[in-house]
Length: 198
Image (cartoon, rainbow, N blue to C red; front, top):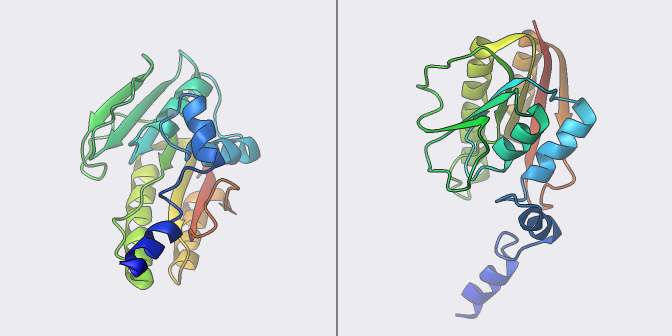
């Protein structure tokens, strides 16, 4: 009983932190919005009128942020296996679908992927599954992005990370690795950014 209580207390995802509180206050369903905001600030991803594909979009924070940044003339296609319950502005289309069997009605200027596997607690397994998701998302980006387009993909740090980065460098003129401040200390996720699709 005591061990179970200690495990609950040690879980960093149970208690809202300052990013979670700030996200709710700003009208976003999840704290992940601050990760995208920081990446956008550093890389300057979005411009008004852009077309954005958001893979693994639930619960909707990234799609909402992207919609604000591209403005009413831009559009965002938010795709996830899970339903997205939060209300979206008119420039966002939500689809409950498999991101990897989606017929992309592109082209897109930006492809985002905040996807993560259902974790097992076995680090090697989780990293391997994360790598597979990342590579699938990168494949979608390779097909759907316009020349000069941008890709942002989440991946767990592990032995496959160099392979993922090398593939991004093949497809894009510039590759960056960013671990945003909003990432929890216990997390081993990072974001690989590909700029200027070849």
